Image (cartoon, rainbow, N blue to C red; front, side, top):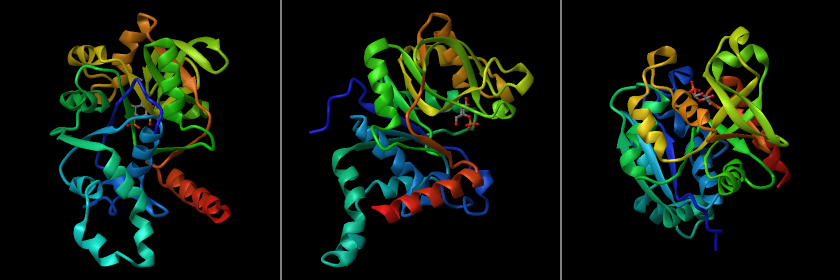
Length: 279
Ligand code: G1P
């Protein structure tokens, strides 16, 4: 039996176009791009399950139906390969389908990550929840990144973001935090800025695509004005919580691959392949 988690729901914003992978993403969701044999979003769902969650809330958009089909039974296919050596290739996804509930809503317009999260509110209801951005693929030999964050949530009872040190020249790709280190690698956040130019960045501590959010974030998001790029930014909404001391940032154990970029995607593929040869 999986450990009991205080967080049950994991939200996956998955409405983005994935233009960096065109033409592959012309008719296929970027979240379905495979690393080895598994689509990116399945890695995310497995990480959420490992952290004790069983309700997956997915914010989709036009052209994303393959995600729904992936997390559903395919009777015809299963019938075809029953009793063959291929059957075991569906064992993991079948386990996920059996253990989890999936719900979907569509984000009709692309108005930013904060807007996508607010769109998911009807699927989450008023409780703390996790967010995974599936194109940040995280791996760790020990417990997963989200599991590490759930532990911190249990301790601090506030929103938690995962961070890593980045090349200071790349701050304009990330939300960047500053704060007071209260335990090794754990910060109480005082400042958050969305994609600052290197000269304006308070630190080189960048938020990666893992969050645990307390539900008051929805109230904040409802009145958050468009920020960087004219979009409603989760970083800006979190800043309101941070001003009250209610955001913790954690340098996680493990490795993140930015599978939203070709470089990161290829790196993930090569490293996970090398790893698979050892197993
Ligand atoms: C989003 C967030 C950003 C965060 C990043 C992590 O940006 O807005 O704060 O650092 O995810 O991957 P995006 O990559 O969607 O532009």
